[in-house]
Image (cartoon, rainbow, N blue to C red; front, side, top):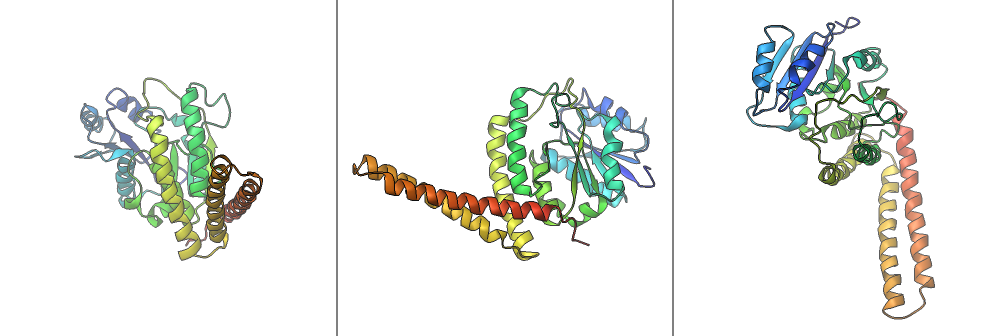
Length: 317
């Protein structure tokens, strides 16, 4: 146990035969259960997990017959941890990328009850993200901005970081089966947590890279995740600010989107007015700029209201 709390660690693994054993060996002694989830790996990952149970009785093997994605693997671990009565549950990837020395720092704010979800932050400074490629850093930065808007956690950094700890209360509240199962699960999970008012905290830690290879292709991943985040953002506004409670920021977002869209139409009309009809562009051009300014003002006001709601903490009991 860790500070009188039962701690479970979920380790999702897919084609990690080279690193799964070092990962299992690195889990600290205070962890009560280790849920090693083999996500239908075609290599020896599953067999290695099974063999390691003879060395460490804390390891609970979970095998998927079909690949469900990293999110699906983590959800399987979460469900088993809940049934086993774990108080807090951490996630450490099967590629040995998460340094176990920082696990207590992620656990403490959740164990203290200050937050219900803690997530690592490798982007806080250049020293911590050493070893991260420039392309990977740019991709993470873009997704961080999009996730801030979608999730409502405006102070959050590095939402792609899979090194996390979550409370039992949060796991029992959100709909685990509704979480996106592939890469992007961590972003979708944040949307669910914010919708129900749970506090989240970043915990800085350095990136650790070795033999693992990222399975994310950012060129397609950002596009796919952007669509996911847009849908998640709309769902969050509907649930949090219309159905579960009410806040006028919904009208500000709608008005901002409408005016911004109209400004684009006015801009296209101004171009047509000038270059097709050969008329002065001044009036339609000015109208387009004014409408765009109004739209941006509405959107910024809505974001400001959303930021204020983030600081109010958990309302759900």
